[in-house]
Image (cartoon, rainbow, N blue to C red; front, top):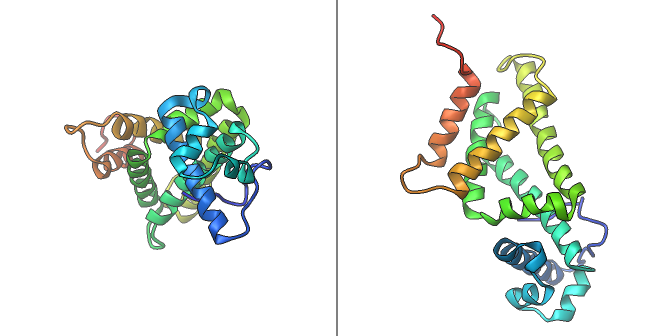
Length: 208
């Protein structure tokens, strides 16, 4: 995962490669700590212990537990974006892009299960981060839908409502088939295929 230029204001951006690696260790440790114990039970000392750095080092990069939590939400949002972007090929049509993006998200969530707990807690710990996370994703989806309409691969006029509906489907598919997955479940590729068929065909009766 990697933070982007929209990092919270109370995060001190490192200027050296060593500093970036240390911040990365702290963010990764915070993901495990918050994922295991939740925001209120997590502690800065536990985060630094997991990261293998001195307690004082923490304050070189973050002002507080709240600050690293906000930074972590931004970091995870960026990682979700990167996972989807890396799965998309230039020659894909609009519907194939949605299938690839969903499959990439399912694989990401399966390997980063703490993301659901952390994002859910953000609703109460830092509501602005929580809202920004979902609004940013919805904007990206809306952009893809608009492009699909312009290319004729999707119905014209798709917008914000459809983007939020599609995002909601993806979020709950991730919850069921990445976070709550078991061995009998279909894999990410099959889940993405079935969801994509829903996008293509809807749920009304088949027509001749």
